[in-house]
Image (cartoon, rainbow, N blue to C red):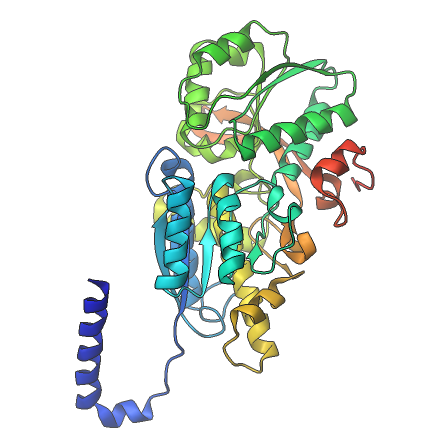
Length: 435
């Protein structure tokens, strides 16, 4: 069907070209569009809090770039003067289905780049295929640090920081606000993202508060949806806080179910990804929840020109502030634009190859709505940024969500040095952290 569509379009184009040959000869040839596959959850429990906001972000950022209406240095059209054409693909399904869709984007649809993936399971499955196909692939959300720690990569990049930053900063914030913590628990999804998040949080707590002990360690399966037994366990524990890296419908389900049973009156939730639902849950999210946004995103974003621009165009279009998946999608597109245009400049204005863009991506620094990004880890393939945490408050007078008592942490305070993997850095006492 697609081949027929393109054939008809080509025939129509030939007819128009014949009718206006003289004017066509005088008009400069437009640069061939840059085709980008955008992959995110468009259906299922992760769609509303994650997939739809990130797709919305891709649409408005690409629209603004194609019109040359971004803030400098993003005010040039598209990527290097060529407009961007996006194809949106649903991440829902098994990892086998995710890989099949990825291969289709690269081999069948001939995408110039793929930007996407929320689930760490998706990223772990796609990474070796991307390297096999030599396809430029940019992860915008998945957080497992394993991507660049298990093997060197050439074609895969992740400009937003990985989960180690989230959990080290969470421990630092918690201990700054609650110095008397002696017992804590965790409820995290039983797959790479949840396992890595809990490992890093516990490791950071052992370094920063060695007398504090783990009370309960709960690992329900991904997309379990029902947490009655886990909430009962937490209610009977001596925990003073419960850590969670829950996201998607699991996060919303846990919040609703725990609120109904009064868990927040016993202990606050420390959620490394909970910012993603504050605009949806509103007054249903308990005051005192410790808010993480996988970086300085959303209400934790710095007051810079890029954040103001992005928040304005997003809110005007969708009548809701952008959450952190939206910020991360914007960051990933802007980073790819910088790498593409650096490669194009080095080539004297010619269209760069995939290898040339990949080489230009390594080690770059660029500005984003969440602050400066430095591709400092993973041999220049993994970004680091400053981050922030705060405390949730429902403002009854304004009928709106607020995040107060915000603390910011430098990138070097919460990320491992370039020569160490995350787990070893934490186990060795987070030496070299610059706070």
